[in-house]
Length: 186
Image (tube, rainbow, N blue to C red):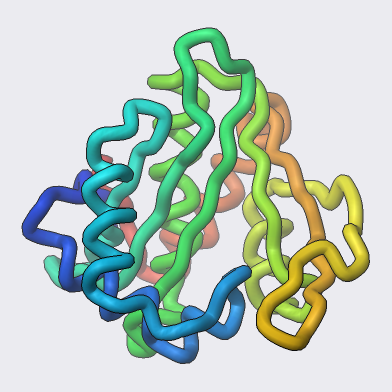
């Protein structure tokens, strides 16, 4: 399997909304309401115009299966925020997420020249946290009841990946991908 990243374009507007509204994705987001067309269009157009954000679709063997993104990017910034999701259930558990991590981290550390890539996850999302730790992220904190979503309060795990940690993890991650038959395009 070949995994690559392709920058989000206007043609991806509908796919991103469908993916984000998928219950298997939205249950781990800070908001989980059905995103309507107007709300999504407003967000999407602003996202495309915002130079501090880089969004890609994750492509596995030519099929778009999810999204990975960097936010809080600035020319003076030493860090940025990172996130991702796989919306295609068939892509899960096959190394696609790790490959998308590797490609986005290469961009963050080599192209943007940041020192730290930060992320957060809902504390109950053990699969995501396990993935993040497997590619070099280290937990930096736990925020109890940090996010109010409807009637529930969500706790959030904060994580960081430093340039040094990624440099130490990258070859191991690529080796694991190779063992799974996954190569990255980029």
